[in-house]
Image (cartoon, rainbow over all chains, first blue to last red; front, side):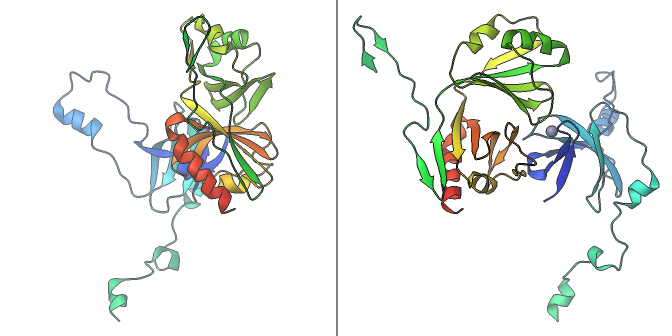
Length: 121
Length: 187
Ligand SMILES: [Zn+2]
């Protein structure tokens, strides 16, 4: 089971206690009533959805109940770090990112274990 | 209901698990006697007032509790605490007068119910539905945490090496009880 470090509980807890809550560090417009529909769409619906390092909101819903933020790799699913809500977006080092990168193509862990063509053989 | 001498009716409160009992494989399940429970929401600036009303300071360390007599105060979140008075005295009344707008105290005495899980194999039964590390190193006596049991949320509180209190919502208690009975049978 994936273990997630809750910055409020100050320890790793099983993923079943948590719920993902979308992209982090999205600034809510201060003039929400004045902005155009297009700008509202950009703010409300359009997410970066990057392949690689992402910053996400999480909630320790079946634990302390707090929202917090996490830096994570969207391909390997590994967490780089978690930090309390309100803390500025951390600057990550190359070493931190390299540590969570998925294995390069061609290494067994990154290849499907079964393909349709193989299944036909 | 019983009729008293003065010709008035007295209502008796019946708990959702009253009368149930289960024991097997060195573990026993017992519904806890009804007590009073308060959920306190207090940020740092309101914790002094909570201390005044409670008679002792709120726990500040995650997953810990503080006991004073029959009153157990559990850390649930950085500003959330569950106070259980197992004897059921006047806790809610004391907090009724609290009202500087910074502290919230909600009486959840009858929203929750509790099951005492005791016996040397209690951890095995609980771990069949709770993914937390319940070893004495990770979850010592006095440790308390909101977590899950199967598909239900619970607050787990270790009262001794071989005894836990499972606090769950009244409406979940039927599921939680049956889950634990099943778990005890298969330990
Ligand atoms: Zn937490």
